[in-house]
Image 1 (cartoon, chains in turn purple, cyan):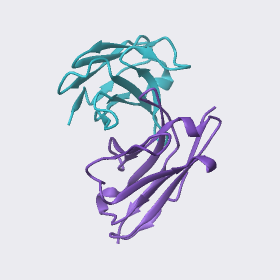
Image 2 (cartoon, chains in turn purple, yellow; image 1 turned 120 degrees about the vertical axis):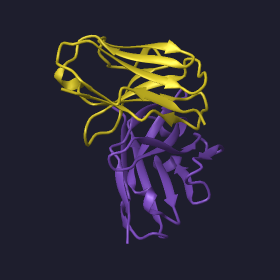
Image 3 (tube, rainbow over the protein chains, first blue to last red; image 1 turned 90 degrees about the vertical axis):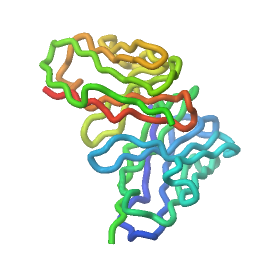
Length: 117
Length: 107
């Protein structure tokens, strides 16, 4: 069974930084594109960022462009999200999600990021 | 940006009933629509992809249909474990996915 385990969430002040990680297992990580999707408390889902299997393609939602950076280390089966200049509205559970044939098929359990002073 | 509008926001039903959830796109998205189920405190689970294809392990009581701008998810006979929030997702503007706002199915 595909396993995606996020970590790195926590409480951070506005303007601060945080780096999220996602450890993947039980599938060939290096052959799949990956995404980050977030969900604010009690709200719906919002796509955040995409990275291709080789890291050659990276895309961001307008709401995070210029502040967040997605990356991956295929040797370590890991996905990352560097979040800088955090704002209150970035408070959410962040999910890493696998993409297969242009569909998001598996999700991790998420890690909570709280931006508050 | 392609906007997905789900209706209704909340549905109150009983086990055994048949239910149809709606998702409407602001412009044509072909068949590039997926449905997810999310239970409290859990990650979303893929139910249907490309409008009508059931994902691996999804029971046959779940079915999807539609193309263009209008899509439906049908659960033929509700089981107690089906009460959850359902989201639609479009990939026509891949990789800039957008989600609907969700429909809550409650007992």
